[in-house]
Image (cartoon, rainbow, N blue to C red; front, side, top):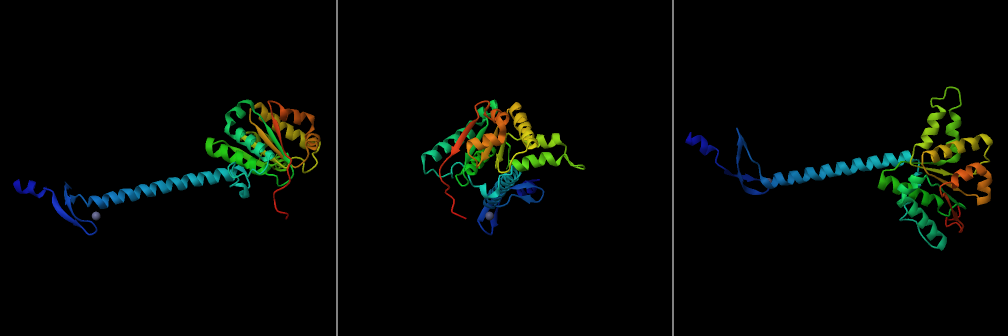
Length: 253
Ligand SMILES: [Zn+2]
């Protein structure tokens, strides 16, 4: 008996890295290992777990941003990276920032917005910036596509053998918290296209889901393209038009 309890007394052991340490009996033939090694191992496991978590978050973000349809070259176009060089740009950035930062209010009213101006004035940058911020900060869903692709998606469901129903196509366009429709008026809108666009905007408005429209046209041409019915729907609930009326900052290409 005495010998047995003696056997379980703490004893000095040697770690090849850290030298002497006190090893305690745990059970059977198991004795505690070097405490410094054990601490290092725990720290390493923590770092690995954190890295895995970071990677999982990054993967989820990549998936979300991919599904948003925001073009890859716009993935770093945040509101913060938008360069202000004139009063118009300052106002546009102010509008976009308020729109993103008060997105709960925007959702409560379904308040739309429209950015119009020439190519290269930063409309898409600010639109992407809004989308990125509400996705990243609030976990909102965003869908960004050209108006032609949106219309095409609905029209495609009319084809025989289509795997998607028209209702599903409209739902895909009306479910996201924010829909960004680019290139309004690039192609002449037929009456059918106009009806589809109205359906989408109307359905979104009914569900208090805002739409952000981008166009390279002048305001009068945008109105003519959209038609009064769509345009009125768009402005309902305080929908604002932001005019990007400065020259392009893009290099000639
Ligand atoms: Zn050790």
